Length: 109
Length: 240
Length: 113
Image 1 (cartoon, rainbow over the protein chains, first blue to last red):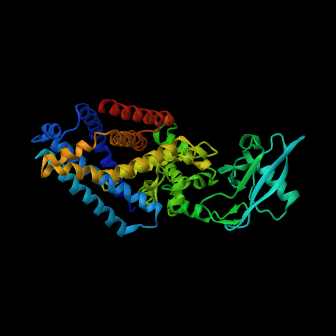
Image 2: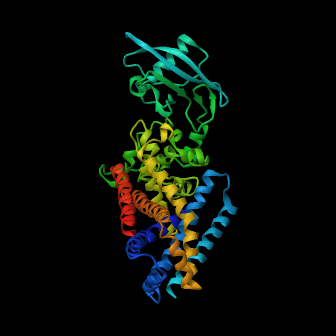
Image 3: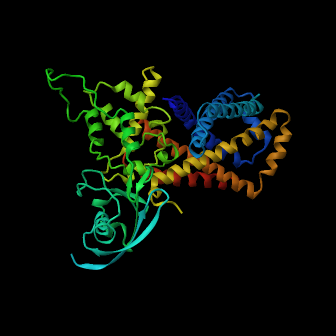
């Protein structure tokens, strides 16, 4: 049953992200209307608990989702499987989490 | 049967390292692809190997790749698949070729067993007969998948089997799902464990090729989805 | 082109889902790095954002919006199949997901100028 938990992580993160992606698409279209500037972006996000939590959760779910997704793609197009692959995609997820966490911190704090 | 014209038929010869050989076969009305193969074997080249038994879509032994798609050849009309009168007939994919159009089905049936595709009785003959309500959800779910004839068309159509040779495949998982919905069965937990994970239902990408190509119009994709959700719930409640 | 046994709606939906997912996974680190520019100095982020104002970058961004939308809608279809009872109108859902994603991408580009 190896892979069951990877599947659970994949689908759970997907369910978490679905409303967040809809929110993100709305924000993208809204933000681009007035032109993208650092001032406009930071004006919305800085000091906001809501955006901090929403995008913090988004980053966490995206990191899990991307790592588990890439795991399946690699195992299907190459012969790389098992523990070393799991470690490698975990590292990829961790990099996304760190970079994403840093990005959220940059626009919220 | 009046002959109208000639079919141009390429047939796979040899094992995996074989090649296509071309035959000319008279075309007739209501001719099936199996008729074409039989014509070649009886009248043009008796060394051609292929399998068939019932000729009426029950036994599941005559499946081949016809113009790139897996099909049951006994119930596939030439006019339907080859309007230009050109046929390319190859062995099923995802199974080792023995010779010509025959493949080794061992993997297919071994996986059927690995998925615990076998009924595990819980009663003896002295027990009363179990009452099963025909329109209960479980009975309906089992019903939907139970007409499988083991032809391996879905298995040959499935790219996940190609990419992940350990994958149990649509037929075995569909069988497992029908048994998971059999209230008389006593092997539910072990079976769910056997079909979960990277070699089981969770490897499925919902290509729906099994559903698309199943000659019996079954929907293994839906069966596999049922297993995914059942295993998901079981794992989260510590019952997997 | 596409092999005959793959040429059906479900497989096309899979291809869109896989390639959009891969595209987003590749884009994500870059996205995070750019936003992270603001951690030191907002003007660094600004000078990058100026670069994104041209048509080529906006067109690429439209592509990214399409990838995000199709991955979302295709993914919702998969979750629906896996966690809700089976519906037979999968082809309709696939066409809707594709069409809606194109509309969302155009909504983005129309609002960008």
